[in-house]
Image (cartoon, rainbow, N blue to C red; front, side, top):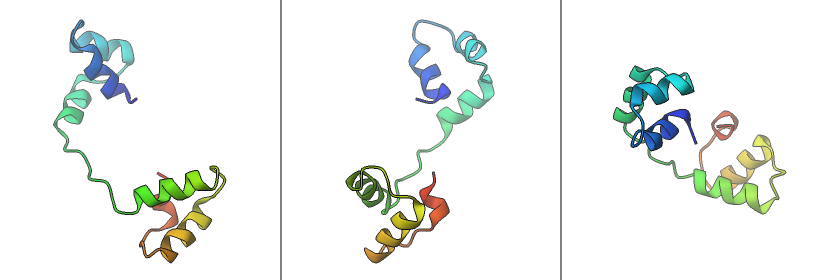
Length: 82
């Protein structure tokens, strides 16, 4: 859970300013996070997670990329790192 999500969860009993101060988060950053639109999931994320789980979490980015490209997904190693 991110600090911003935790701040959002705790604003019911406490003020936003107090929670942000305790978590060392800026209020403006929290409100900017709230206004941001969620990023849609890309098509290769679910197959990448399935392949990683199928191989017991031992596949690195090079092997995952090769497997996903063999399945027809256009993805690079550095996109898989996130």
